[in-house]
Length: 471
Ligand code: TRP
Ligand code: ZN
View (tube, rainbow, N blue to C red):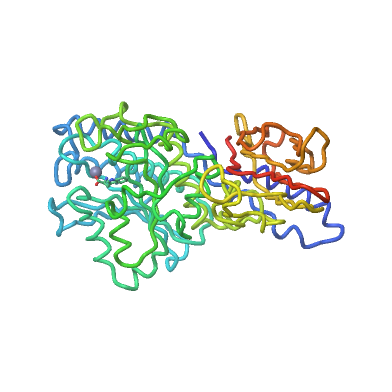
């Protein structure tokens, strides 16, 4: 499934809008995004085929793919030959300092500025207890399919892209540590960010991002935010996977994970589904970490597509700089004014009114004097969305009484009012979730506007939070 904020049709819509503007502004077309900038839909079936292959390898080799074992060597051969068939030059780097000496697989896609290298990695080894399909066939397989998709699309690159599959992670991050140490400091300085993919399809998982608030994490987060997933910091996995080997040398890192043996909280089960009180991956480091039973295909797909989005937004020409048509961002207002324009001082963490989740929200009204406030944001609705919808939560309280309308709020799409509220709206002082069907806007960039007016006396507060899209 593809949830990538598509630019193709949005670009056409923008281009035609610009041709009208051209009458007064002949250079406006220079900013039109290019068709080539869109990240691909990574076919999850292809990712699943790689996982089947890794399962078959384990089955044929004593049930595991532990570093240094026959199952591990067969895994490196599969990754290497698949990459070579797609045009990659693949290096096997012997990890001599590993507990089980064996090879890292490193593959560079030719092109881009090597002084801006973006690395994407996953550990390829399993524990000896089992085939290691979620840990970490899942990260290995989305990485492999992304490498193939990059070769197939062959976009013009600004940054340089390097993929790596690490050995001996399970014995202490040894393969990746060996690799980073083997680089010169000049070579390390060329790596602008390292992205890690470890356990990205946990059956009872959540949506976790390493160093979620950093610049490196921004495209990873923007993609999952665009799906309304409300990702959280990867607390459980901190310092426990190969990103830590890069972090130790001061290289910015991020990554996706769906979780290991820690248990899902009830708050997490409410927002993501699954079973509260159970491990994110009940088969962590066990014989039952098998394909297909221990793979969450939805999570696998979302991770694969977010990885593609991140490759495109870091290293592909035009892939991350288009002025319009990105996903909805900061819908929970937790990043303050980020991505919103207008009366952004009304985005607040004031304790005067509760947030729906987190502490920040949009708090329109409340003045009891004549005011008019609004915030807006533009974002893309994918052309191939099955049922695009926008949701948000609203909570209204007022000092007015009776059914006469004095203070009002509207939620608009492209200037059309979708929902209206007032001091007379019910329910009061409680949150309700509202939905807007966006089917009519597929393949376009739309502007969402949240606005309120108050008359000269008696406050009404319209508090809005957790604006999200789903496609
Ligand atoms: N897979 C690694 C391990 O076995 C790292 C890890 C542990 C991890 N817990 C995690 C990765 C949680 C992501 C999320 O130790
Ligand atoms: Zn592990």
